[in-house]
Length: 326
Image 1 (cartoon, one colour):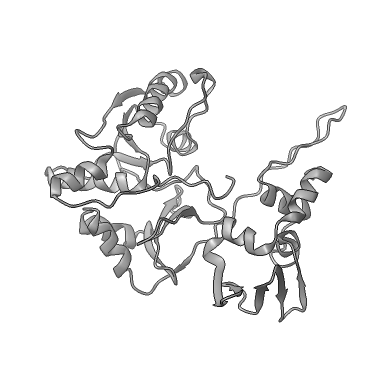
Image 2 (tube, helix red, strand yellow):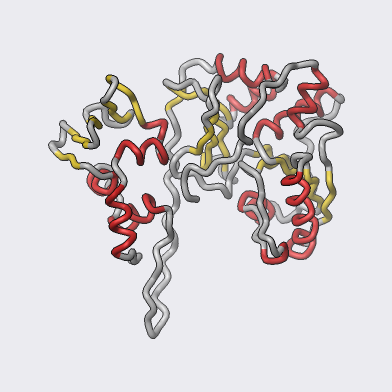
């Protein structure tokens, strides 16, 4: 059983439910009046004036901790860890405790809108090929959420089970992750037979690269295409850096990969990430690493939009997320 300190418990009790949902589960919030919310899962659970009450069950309280325990049925220590964003620390003992396997994350995806028109048009406005969008929708890699009409990019595991989702607002600056997302399984296009992997920072950059391949008359699914769901930031001492979770998992799942192309952003962060991966990947996985920055522009969507003569809306943030612990 995990261990949490009295300080962690006190900190967890300070967070009210509205704040918790705004940070960790924004897609669960439904506004029913200027000062009242309910959750998408339980419309009889009302949140107002710093308190919450689940009227159909006759329970309520002030903080998010009680909500996670009594509504979500999450064990006490795990609920504290979720709110504080910290991993529980086991107290020192004279012998090593038995290690139980970690519980798999439960991915809570936003509801699917009946139509994907808004999401489809959003990707088309970014220059993404229509066939690729339809492929993503058909394979469960992309959909439009309800009721917010956000773009949802889904990462699948080897069994094609959804394990991760990036949520991007359309017409606003919202960027987040679905609760329970596992960054080891970010948005990707596996290839049937290839020993080459192309690595990107975001799903849109991956789709832009695939679109460019189509424009050049090349097959877009010949090689493995993998996104990192954000910017990879190595440690100051590069050799002490961990590899991105999504990349490590993909290489473990596909041991036949021999070459990795770094299709990262052409900026300071992307260059630093590339220098680090060029050093670490050959040592840890024995693969050849090549830089493949976009010919011009900051990233491959910049390059695609420029090539197609599209005016790209300035983004305030890259498609990386920090809304929940992973």
